[in-house]
Image 1 (tube, rainbow, N blue to C red):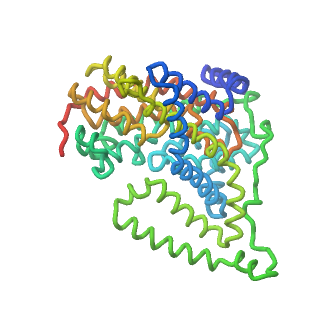
Image 2: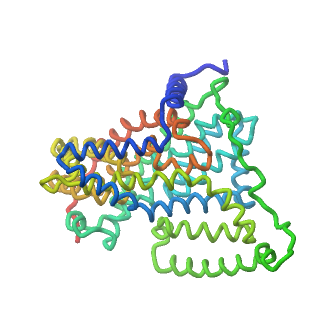
Image 3: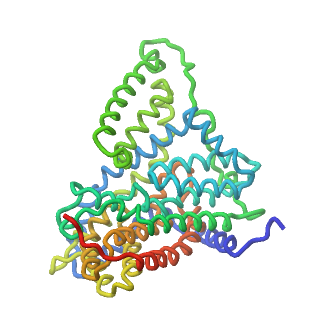
Amino acid sequence: MGDSQNILQKFAIKVSDWSEKWFPDSYIFALLGVIIVAIASMAIGAPATQVALSFGDGFWSLIPFTLQMCMLIVVGYVVSVSKPIKFIINTLARIPSSGTGGIVLVATISLFVSLINWAMSTVLTALLVIALAQRKELKLDYRAAAAAAIIGMGATWALGISSSAAQLQANKASLPESIYQLTGVIPFTETIFLPQSLIMTAVLIIASIAIAYFSAPKGQNVKTIDQFNIELDRDDTEVQNTASHKRPGDWLENSPILSILIVILGAIWMFNEFSKSNPILAISSLNTYNFIFLMLGIALHGTPRNFLNAVSKAVPAISGVLIQFPLYGSIAFIMTHAMNAQDLSLSHYIAEFFVSISSKETFAIVMGVYSAILGFFIPSGGGKWIIEAPYVMQAAHDLKYHLGWSVQIYNAAEALPNLINPFFMLPMLGILKLKAKDVIGFTVTQLIFHIPLVLFLLWALGRTLTYIAPTF
């Protein structure tokens, strides 16, 4: 009886079994992405030499973001394995009474925390999965739990205050002049805080949790962490100050004095940063977020030696980010910088095609499909909006379509590829020591339901809004 399966469980497990056998490592996935966009760019007339140059020029274009993501993983891990935060995570992990309950808990936290800060949700939920997996009596399916940890990135993150596109549109200083002349400033009240946007967010949260619950394997179909032969560190990240002080360097490493002084300096900077700008916008900056968590990690671990030991445990988790993000930078550059004889790029032709086939009635669906497709190849919310906005917002103007909802169409749709694109899975996968093929069966299940649901909501809710001319 415990092994009976519903249709969602059967589908998720079949896709998972298939992906474990056939789905390549995420590095291969990135390589294929480069080859596909390179061939497509040459197909529109871009010279092969220019494609190759764009590949090389773009290879290091995401270096700042790569470092940010690496620091995100490291500081998130360091904070999460400190005694106070581990206590909170372990307390949460004691709430579920079953593996399915654990998966629902992870999904719920991922969905809600992503609304505040997508980066925080990625690391926090991964550490929660580890804590749940260590409760052997739960019989937690490690694959489904890991997939639940990324749900927020594919459902809600871009509809919350960390939305890159909404933030760009709400701040004149951040907008390129070409976009500002089209849209003016669009405040949060016309994007993420629209009643229609809040309704869509609520529906997606409920649907995502329901799918996670009904697709969770049960009985003999459960694949626990033990079946992956993964060894997770339990207590060795909490290195106590027990080293003998045989030399002055030992004393400095095991004394909290230096850590306290650094944290005081950091606290002064943070006070100034949050005093001069909107705190919500400040915390949504990855640099500020990483700085806060770095200072918090130093404070929570007390001594430099304890802090460094925790950092050394986190470093292996960043290997996928370091080697794959440069390839995604090349993909974005080839799509936008490899020009044909008419000085047009692949991204222009894709946008032009979707704009040409849209009408006011179909705008939401057509633009949603376009944003999702482009998001698969350019997985950067803010950077992709700068590429996409001139075409999308011009079409919205011509069709007299609500400009704020046009931003939300982009936000909701561009998040969808995150459910199957390894780009944003890498931090979570690195911490859990899994590969994309291990979780793809369950994230594909979410995606299949999300695509029609998101497109319908964008279309139906968009019909309730009227065009408002931009203000400058």
